[in-house]
Amino acid sequence: MFNITLLLKMFCEVNKGKRNFDLHGTSLTNCMQAYSEHMIENIVKTSKSKLTKKYQIEKELNDLARMIWENNLRQVNFSDFIKVFSSEDDVHILLDEGCFSIEGHGIDMCVQFSYDMIAGYYIAKNILNANINEYCEIYENNELKDILRW
Image (cartoon, rainbow, N blue to C red; front, top):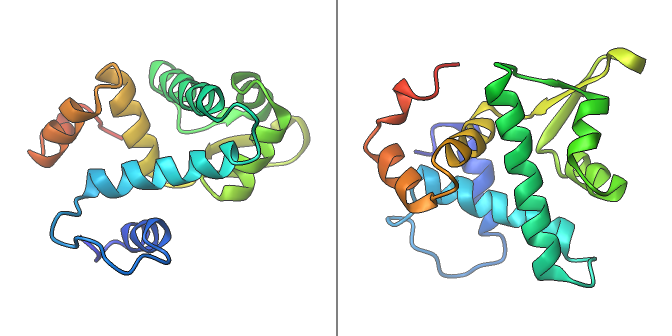
């Protein structure tokens, strides 16, 4: 699993500071799920209503994934990207977090998930109505290759 640099980065990021973790129980989907939760926690930590904010960010990321999937895109115009999120601060934190990258300048600026695996993770979750257990089972059985053809 760790021959993919992104997965090693995610694994290290979500396990930073931990002394005990189960390497054998770590899967690709667990790693992406933990990375996603870590990213969302970094946004939520400054919010007064953490539970509401967490739900809101998760919903907005799912909305973005649906937009990408339904329009057969890899990237969206920056103005469309910021419309998905209810807070400009959240947009800045997401960009600073490294989950998204920006290309172009001015009105031609576009935003995309920095890693196709993360985009695929959110798209798959969205397709499966955010049922993460069903997603994990399908992914671990290598059945997603037919669903996510990039």
